[in-house]
Image (cartoon, rainbow, N blue to C red):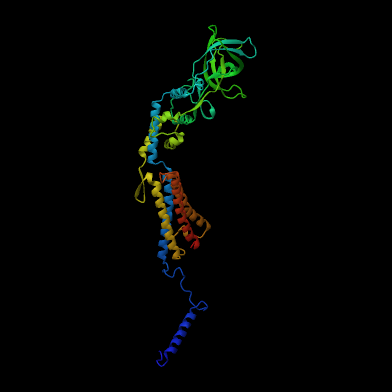
Length: 465
């Protein structure tokens, strides 16, 4: 009870002393002072056992969902979509159509046309490079003995040019015994791939004249000379008394010291002393003009809206991926298999009760994954703010062992970032320039990485409580 006779100034001093006493009683220096609530929990009610259970159970569910979405996106992204299967089926139909229209002499005809066009555009000085050898008769001396010599009238039955493949090697995919003029009809994808890839680097080289002097002769075994005999030759005037020899062009190497070179070769109809009647004579030729032949363009012209220049893997990417294990089968069989896979393929996949178009898997999948990452981070933040300790739920995020922390970090922090980067890079989120595509991939990956770092901060800052 306050004494009313005490002056107001003295009364204020007494109240001030009482307040100071209360403050001193609760100060940290007072050993009897109560600890008070933690700073982070000052504005929050202590978590009950039910709250602890609900929070931990929910976080466990979200973490599990995050992992399942990551695995699902990887599976869906790496599996052939219906769009890929449809493209693969169209590509095998195109190859079948090319097979039905295949003319075994088409490459030879294209090369002949290219030489004719080059000849028509050539200058008078270069025109002899396209005319072919003018030699009419030859005098051949086998070995070093002049008596083993014969004279022949010669005629050139083939072209004065030759097709070369990569590294200036002879184009090697001619049909057997076709005289470098036919390409066999491809029976399967393996054979078509070989032909298609070989057509990327084809050049035509003319050989307009013979090189007088060194030559070779010998028996041919399996199309190649066996132990060729060094021979010399020179050009002579033709005579009706001489035997005839037809010369065709080819490329060969008869000695390890000799370079691969063009040769005109032909079977002698007469007998050269010391050699069999089936002797073949090889006369070296000099190179003339060389120019590229766009061999793939002939096949591309059949389907210009679908085919382009490049390797088989680049142009027929979907078919190559869909038929990896059975490209040696007949083309008709492959078409049947691809068609059945196309009929079984789905146009959409379902997640969380919502159907997403397969073509939009990457775009929608990344958005879903980022949303789950954000949701997980927000709930983990609230879980730490409430300082929940020892929840009555078996959740790996509440374990304190090193193994648990490593597993949590991989499944909840590292895996989502890696999956976002993988799906974004593989799924082609944009169809504009390559630079924009790379920028988008880097952007979404950085967003995922930022959310993962924020989640890691909340997870590790408070220990594993």
